[in-house]
Image (cartoon, rainbow, N blue to C red; front, side):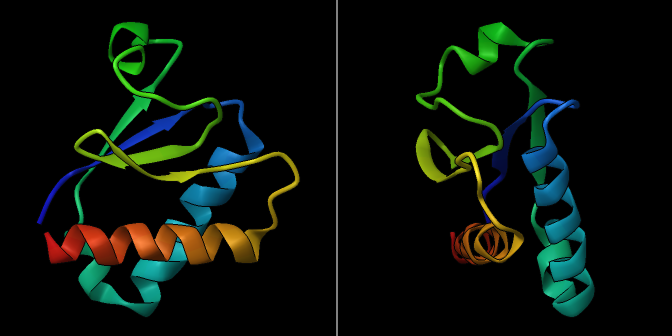
Length: 93
């Protein structure tokens, strides 16, 4: 299993939506609780964020492979689908 780098901002509504989705998925699938997230606030740690290629928050990576990047107008169902793919991938590796 590999750690997920999770770039976020505290003020970002899409980040809050992703956090909510993660918790819902863990409740539904307890095995997802094994996935380790390294949450990085890009304002607090620009030196880390600058090492990754993304334009929007939230964004999730395993290694330097981007697995998820939100977009403006993203609905919760889409966030859920994409975040679940990240969780499944993290458990595979």
